[in-house]
Length: 108
Image 1 (tube, rainbow, N blue to C red):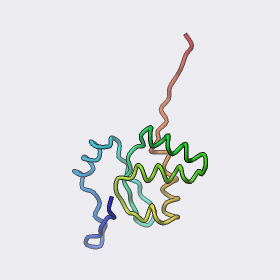
Image 2 (image 1 turned 60 degrees about the vertical axis):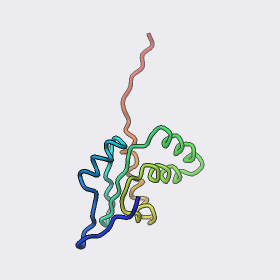
Image 3 (image 1 turned 120 degrees about the vertical axis):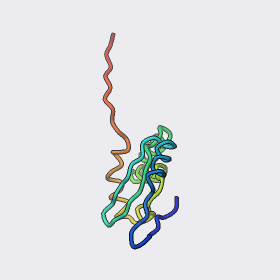
Image 4 (image 1 turned 30 degrees about the horizontal axis):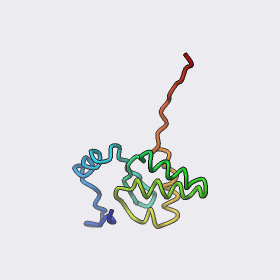
């Protein structure tokens, strides 16, 4: 989506109504804050996105991060995707988007 704009010296983030719309559209929505006042909003990756990231990540581990962030991106400060330091900081939070749910299997 487009870059966030500044109003009155402060960034104009999404309204609560916009966030509720995103939740209806995407399910879980995450706000990721990066040092320096940068923010982005991400959705949980689908199986298709995760599979594509795993496939590409075998060739290049950084490509895994790029695919997840770019395909889960809803809105935010584009600098996070463009500036290497900000991007690396965001990459450190990707595991939150892919929760591990416990499961048990038993032979019967």
